[in-house]
Length: 392
Length: 203
Image: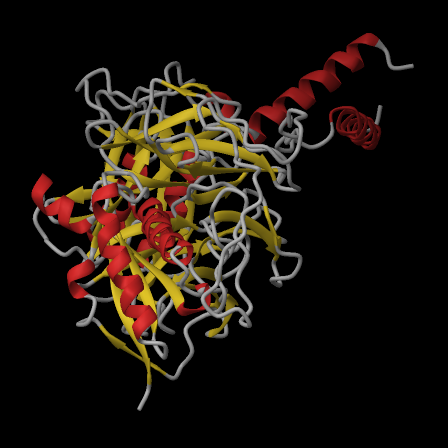
């Protein structure tokens, strides 16, 4: 048996230890997630500064003066990046040197650490996207950092290429290519540069989407007489239809647990969202009250929310709880406008969305922070950029 | 008491705490799937599925004809072979136009498909590729499927006129190849179309 004063001493000792190990205890609580968190930055220059600002702004922070900031970010980026974060009471929350990679990579790593001061938040500054670049008659697939930097061309077929989709956890892309005179689905391993045909049935082959566990693929095939949703194993075997409707389906996406597929169908007259069990069964309309002509759904990695495009006098992004119900039209209460855009795809953090905006006659790839409604275009690649997919 | 005993007590407490609470993990429960009768579309306002069996006549009785589905859709046969050439000229004036967001063949358009059918019956050695197109007022992947559905609708009409389905191919270009690059109703009406491309064996 421990005597009472020793038990007290032990408790105090443990409390001290836990306080020192969790700086999160002193980060100001976020009361309203739709409000920006004011943050001040000093000491950084050039690429490091611009990367840091972009990363923090799209993560729900607002660059402010030291007077109004809740967090003070300082440091330098000479040979390596030195990053410090303190709260208003001068408590040191981060003090670290980042030495790996380029100046931008170091800034992204620092930005992720800042974001992750907030419990439950996941940094996305070092993630990747893929997208289509249309230069006129042809279109090719590109990959890039999530902010559009370091863009690399993946296909060089001088043909029409569409709808890139990452295999979760792997540097492998599915996409649709017309290089053999028909829209076919290909699987392309970026590590070895090897690709092989995945679906080359008569008619349309497109919309490949890989399940979160990487084992199955949903896709759109018209070989049965109408574009329908099919599912097969990652090696192309065990192909079977999940829909059999007279009208066309498109854009399948997977639930986080891999049991359900959400997709678009025109079976009800106008475009609407439906779900079907990945192991087969009846398709069921997903209620999106308040949003109409709904297409291109994507299911958040945390399983809770489906983001999609609604066409209501123009394309706009909307969300709905994964079980269906009232759609959130993402109207910004300050500007009273929604988010003009289409073809959204969730980031691994289930908070940020990459999508396409139409600007004049071209398309640009853009990011949306759903809680704050902040929109930032990614670094533009020459041409018309669209159909982004976020690597998970 | 010695410092070493404090450390042992701390270690024991730590182990007990972790044992009770475990490590923090993202909790992923299964998405509830409602139990439904399999096999039927359960949307609110589709017309009942036509379960009447369809027999699709073929102009060449000995060829294998893709069988029509009960709802009128007709499976595709094969892909276009590598030994064919495309000619847009012979059937250029028979382009079929569609209503916005629709793949149904309008009654005013059927005469053109009948003309294509006559051409194919008079030219036994050729096939036809139907290109399906959309205007820009749909999203990209949606338009790829809609364009294909339009091409397939024209193909169904041709097969029902007696053309062998193995001679008729489809390809969708979605909104990628507008006939008119304008951004107004007149341009969009010209873009919602099915075009016929004659397929000849390479000489």
